[in-house]
Length: 255
Image 1 (cartoon, one colour):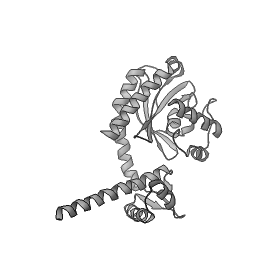
Image 2 (cartoon, helix red, strand yellow):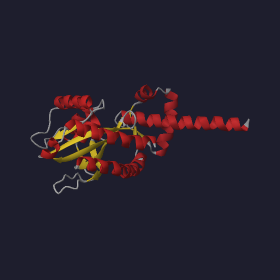
Image 3 (tube, rainbow, N blue to C red):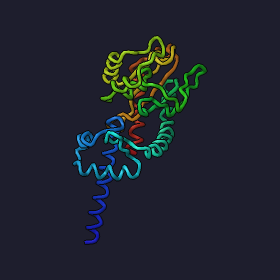
Image 4 (tube, one colour):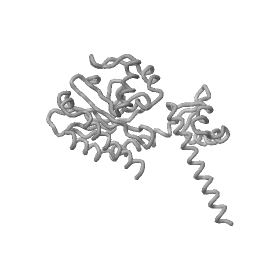
């Protein structure tokens, strides 16, 4: 009887953890903040259950409540996120090295933090003329291949562009929201994103999303001088990128 009671208590505890993670993921899906009704619609959990979970998350600093009564991801996640981001860079290095070996060009891993793209890992090309994106560098997503790959699967891409504005980086930068949304449609259709001198003149880049099973959590890219990137068969390069990104996503979330 005692064993049965302990097993039941363990099952309840595991379910509570699972539901708390559902709430945090729902907040993330809504751009970092949401109302109770939005969380309920996303998770399918009863209001009472969500409210109890939020009170615990509030007390631990993983969630905060805004003045308009909406809930937002809290500062305690920053500590965990910083460590996770560093570990992600360590895990990515052999996969980026494989991309460099296959393509001969610099390989990068980037994530979306708020409305900004952040480069978290890089393995440089061995060639004398090569591209660098400093690890830790923050850029707006509209003019980069990694940014487009990260936003292509999100419903709030337009809201991101409206918040950040679309400053012109080069004469090839797309600065119209409608045109960018059309470009994201093309990214979804073909499975990869391009930056054809939109962030830096003379530099071309191709990126693909990295999935955790369903959602995009990072983007992998190769970048180099325009003439070298353009000389490679685009579909072959994209297939190579997708394979390495799939292997990396599987290794991170299914190991």
